[in-house]
Length: 281
Image 1 (cartoon, helix red, strand yellow):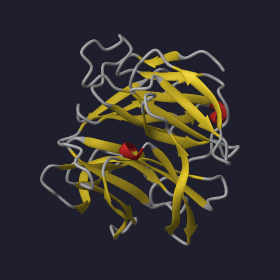
Image 2 (cartoon, one colour):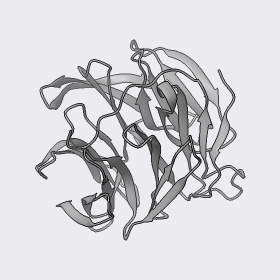
Image 3 (tube, one colour):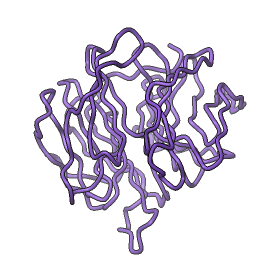
Image 4 (cartoon, helix red, strand yellow):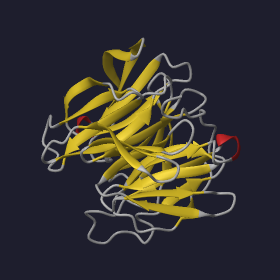
């Protein structure tokens, strides 16, 4: 496995959700607690930072430009010129948006969680481009990684405190037959964000585990990537040929964080990712 390098040195409190935008050749990621949406262009090194008025759990590219964001009080749209509008406003005291992913059909699967991480205090919903919201999984605790198999027939999902990656069969636009795919053993961290590669393998970041893991489509542990930081949060493939594995990290809650905690890391030529889908495409 290739060595890990620093893509963007940053001190994000809770870096999350790296997403490759092929239309612009840039990586999008967020600092949830810092209320910031970051972008990074590997080719030029150019960066941008967009301040949000609320904690932002995820930001994904929209078809035609702009972003869709999973905020504290719902899902919102940013136009390419920065203009803001609510798509779905669903404010629940003590709850915020967390990780999200764009499905093959162009919908956003947006998760929520309680700030106090109370059991069953969050959910996962499907948000259509017209704003229609369909609750998929009620009563989850910390809604996190979501990703689809290469043929779109399966969806993987993480509710972090369960220590499981679950898998469902897709029945049209909805997940069915949810079952455990892989379980993270005690003492090695909690599963957080995930990505699926071109081989159908699932990469997962282990919060408090200082590691990424790759599981085969059969659910077997295939390889690990050790990291210098304790709290990796999510990963995605990007760059030329979708071969570079980008990793977001966090420093929140650590008394003595590593100097790279909160930075965006990259493992060059770590594999091959799947092309992403823009919201509304």
